[in-house]
Length: 514
Image (cartoon, rainbow, N blue to C red):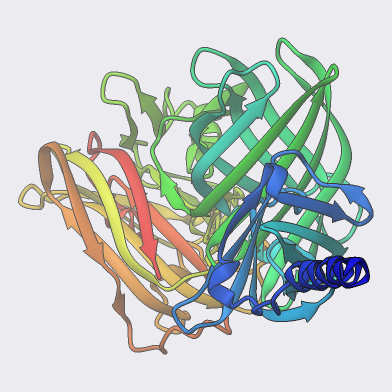
């Protein structure tokens, strides 16, 4: 009996052990599906190495399912200078280890940021572990001539260690010619940089910024630029950005006495002039002003002042009106060594440059600056008062025998003219332009025009003028063009016809394009 009892006990123990082992076995895992990993991974749910180094503490990876059922990976605070980097068409798979895990991978080359980024990761127990590799995309060095004078207007976000929150302001960034001898570089400018109206730090001017082309995108960069800012003193800047169609994106990293400042800018191509910023121009003993990014016939005024024909400039800033004031002046009507000086000389405000040609003054105005879109609308705010007496100046003979005749036309009322001309050029350089003669030449390559004339507007009025084709060809995005805006107080001033005292005020100009 005792032996039977011991056998029974042993049997029960073995059976219990076997049953225990059976309970310990896990049921086979069910492989995860895409919906199991969709979402955002950050903080303790994310472990990222970027080129072998730990990612920023604020790094995030968002796994997205797109409308077409493809997978995208959105990387936040991981790619340098890029707040969000999207990798489309990522791969989702499963792998078996001790249990099933989800795997994610993808690669994307982005010409705007200038980086090729690849990601390999696994999702296990709701934690994403990823390895990120970042490579710069090589580009082809190109000349910046097509961008000289281009401006971009948009939002600038400034982040600094001593700021409780980022500061966002509206700002313009513009490109000018380099003052160096280096090829394929330009000067990047930001006027009145600061942290809002209460803290202005001065102008940023970065010369020697390298331009390169990646596909259809133009990238630019410079490192270790040193400039002086008001209050702060000398700072060091790195800049990296891109121009993609009509959009500029840019990032600035500023080291200001050990304080790190980051600036992110996104702006659209802007061809407008609000007449609020003027620059001094010195010619001999005279100094006059011109609106920023525009030119005037004031240089001719220097010539006439030296001859005692006038005592003030043709184009000035009218503080009371907040506008450019353009005058037609009484210059008497005479001849100097065969050069005709008309009775009525009209002032001109325009895009381009003024290079005085004393023997043929109409050739002094070099109209046009590069324009990279198809213009649709010229917006202008202006008012106009015509002078009392309208004159025409004619001449006969040549050289010292030139005879000048001035005729009054009491029934004619003077008119102002505001017009914009899009014309084809072979090159963006300074030698390809229209002047006072060729702008009305039937052989010119002007393909689109928007214009108005007026005998008077007592109060400021705003107009939107549509560009019309001239019949000399259609806009072709593969060709080069310049755009000339020309504002004058006497529409027939180029023919020596006008009324002294005619005054045109222009408050703003803007060209919209597509």
